[in-house]
Length: 117
Image (cartoon, rainbow, N blue to C red; front, side, top):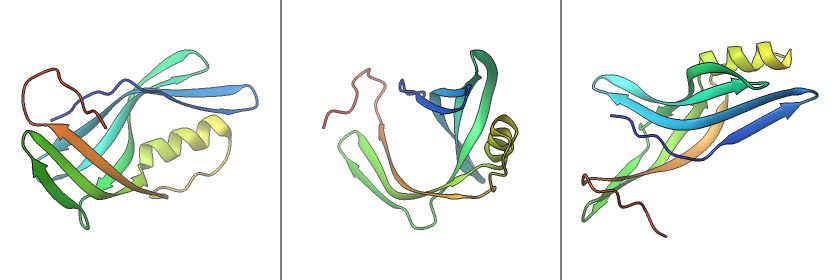
């Protein structure tokens, strides 16, 4: 299952600019979920790369009507993303870097309605 969102993140150092868009969570049976994104470096499209590993070990799940919320999802930097950042910014970004926690929300119906807070 994956679903793309519509926001972007930009990182820049010196003249180098990295843009992340089109985020999607890829979750399959017996495989840990991963947040992927479309990566562009200095205006050149690189591809869809795994960005963050998502752990559900300490997560809590709740459902209200047709909405699902997964709280306390642990987020760490994926090895592919760490390698790409290290190469682009000429530094050593550690794999598995603890990014923090996230909340994942999803609609369980097939409609086009989004979340409103």
